Length: 283
Image (cartoon, rainbow, N blue to C red; front, side):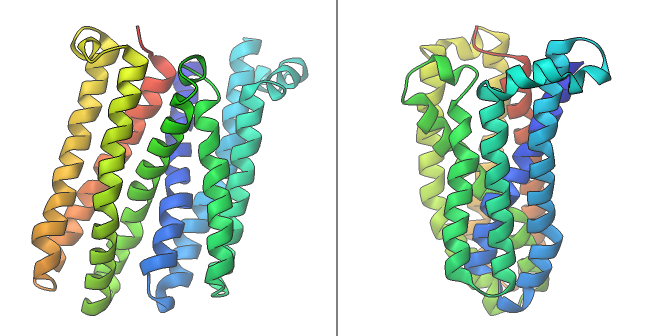
């Protein structure tokens, strides 16, 4: 029960982290000034508040798992003290500070202080991504694996978190604004995809020792399902960049549907990631 609850909390946390990193960057760079307030109030601030709460909830779930005394065990002071001084406590504290910084960056966007917001966004991204290498399989492996995983998670968050603001832009923006935003994101995404694939391949090899376990273990087969979904996501992104965006505004409706499909796939990929990192591991 506790592992499942922790996996679900991580899934929601990954979504909030994507909004804080990718959503804030997208609103900062490509959303017209007139739409910034709506994005901040409907997407960025709720995402940061949810992430702050989920950081604490994840820690309390782990306390409950150690206490093994039902829901009341989540607040056991002895186990809470122990976990607070462990990597789990460091992760919760660091990511909480990251969500606070991201929320402040969103508030600065409301006041059109984009330069100050960019500085806080960089601090928030650093605090949110550093903990990915502090526990679990990566903490026991190569010292380079943690930074690689942080970079990989950051790229994924930047991409997935950007999708909702871009979808809103495509629905409500002027044709010139839509084309500009989508083209700019497409140029950045080309580099992001290359880094994502490179980091992902290196992380897989470092964790598994070779690529053979991908078809020789349940963990490897689950990873294959995730990789298949990522492949579909890449195909949708390629279709947007090379076919739909160049034909705007005639393809506005198709582009909206494609971005919605990317959001759904992104949510499923984040769920699989949470399940793999919590309920399974390299054999």
